[in-house]
Length: 300
Image 1 (cartoon, one colour):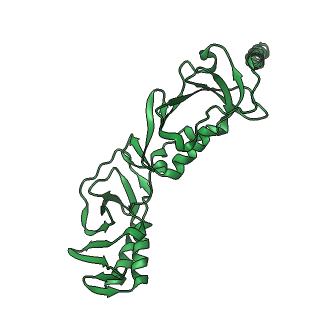
Image 2 (image 1 turned 180 degrees about the horizontal axis):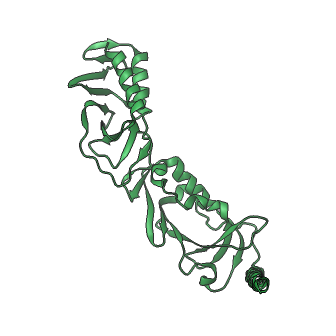
């Protein structure tokens, strides 16, 4: 009796899979030579948003030439990873077109939506539905739909970057603490153990600390440590408004000042405040100690 029941179940499963295969075969439409889903270019995009089940996971907006995260946090974005997402989207191709009820493909209630706005004011969307039960050329795929109503099957690997993981916010944040380029830094103010030290760049690119000349190589090492300081993680939802006083830095550029201070997190990391604001990003104590050691060598 058990063998008979098992056979019936297997026959039902086979029938469902065969039905899907038959349906895809019958609804297959000729694919044009150019089978890209979108025709716009990366540089045309002004904003990019990824939603899951109607909730915004991340929202990028471009201001000038710089990408920023606007939701769920307000922070400068890592443009390399944003460009990677745009590369995936603008090069996205389909291997077949389909017709029929959206519910057949899970597109009546899509799991993900990718929405872009272009500089010319036009908007485009891509909705991601179910995973295809049938491989195409040994490749897994997903059903997607554009806001124009067309249904496509696309390669699963081309969409994997849009299925954001738990640490996606940290991934897409700008990692460098100081945004002022090294060659644009004109002044540094260090606060250490209640004392203040001013390091100033002169008209002839010579550097001084509290009026005394210092070696260019020593300043170069210090500047490298500052501009290369990176956040190592993010405690999402954490807000820190007060830094500790033992060690802090003011970095002066041509048109702005960035005030960097730190607050305790744990034995190995400290929260970093930029202009008195921290959204949970932190740096390793080791990196801070290396910066302090470079500074200490300079003032000895």
